[in-house]
Length: 427
Image (cartoon, rainbow, N blue to C red; front, side, top):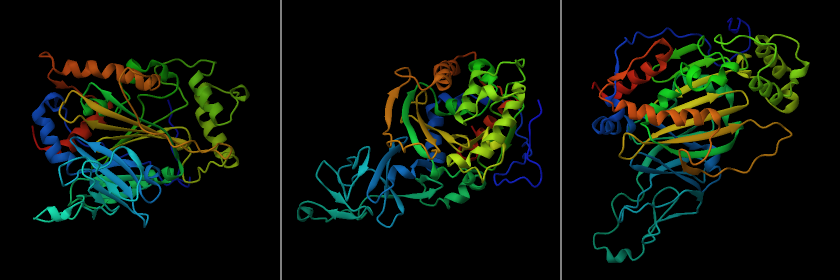
């Protein structure tokens, strides 16, 4: 299959050049990284508490006083919008007796612990400590809630438990240049789920870091994507692949009938499949041209995106735990979080964002919905992965299994482990 590439002179801001594949060897990835409590402890001490972490969408804390409580491992973090428009983050713990200060998401003029009504300003400083005169030692010297670093970028709020963390943009480099043309801040959130899965968080990261499994787990996608001949790029911490959509895999034979997933993509763009006169393999380029021509009349600004981005999945992984299925009209963001104590469990966050047409009403802001795997559907493709991963995790405990045996199509997984071990240290 010939994959279209941007020619010199075409408009583009997202870099498209292929990076040189790093020499990461062919060693097996030991299974202990997925199942051992001791490795889970090292991850927490040496990685999770050192990096920048995705916290929420900016629209979750849009107005002064808006707040949201998120968690990573054993810690809860309170993220909030300040009166001056900036964002701040705090450990969500009262220094009096350790109670959680706030719950969920909302708007407040002050933060008040419901145990003894110790109260804090939006800036985290003490506002009111009832009966403070009965504390001979006075108020705690911390002065209020303990802060964590928090910064905002492109419609998202990140935080770091590392007080010495450098600027967020430096950590994200070079992905700011890659992803800012999508203008995520213009998109609105339409789905917000948290699902408990019976697998290690890295088992989930792996599943979304390669397309090699499409032929096995998602056979219907062979009639919508090219799953093997894709571009893989690795950077200092992060990685991506560029995967053609609205086409068919080299693994299947072309038919005269347009597959239903490709038809759906055409209809979503306002293109009538019945009007298309060409081969299925030609739909992708025709759809790009149609969206380029007709997008502006629907209020869809694609001016900062190249033609491939109008159809394809520019699929990014922000280390350590963010998967971004990035498209011109929407973003499907996965956040994979470790369980507090069990390496065989995790939390899988799904947040979907959509670029609205001028004729679409802004949907009501969704609240986070929590459920366990199997209690409800997340859509066919995610359900297929979710059904498979507990078996993968169980298999890692077998005496017959030693670790991951990776091929070239799984380069992103090997690169992820290289970065992980840069933080954690050798096994």
